[in-house]
Image (cartoon, rainbow, N blue to C red):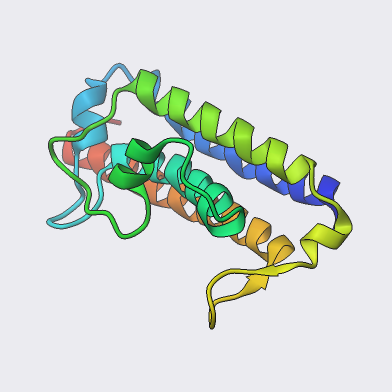
Length: 164
């Protein structure tokens, strides 16, 4: 496992996440309605899915790895794992773009600054420890997973609203 390969994987998954956001933005639909739409009761809306990607990067690096506080406490409180998607907390396109950009820039800089020795370092709470390199791979997978959920939810939204 090496830093350039990890960065390439991260950049690829982020490009796919931004591509689906761009597709939605260019759709001509009311974006607040799109971002708030749920595919079923209790399911996360697309706005939450996008913001969850940003919140996860902030929490993993700043809390789980570095042992500090989130850089954006309200982002993590509203959208990190374990939160419940709120119908009153629907982000705007501008907010989604800004949060995705800022959290990814911080995360990417963190990964770029690591060494091969760092990647082989274990961290995390007792019983849930893993190598930093494995966590970086997991976070790329996590973002791809949520990009897929957004893509599916977007397709369901279009079908439910008669959009070709």
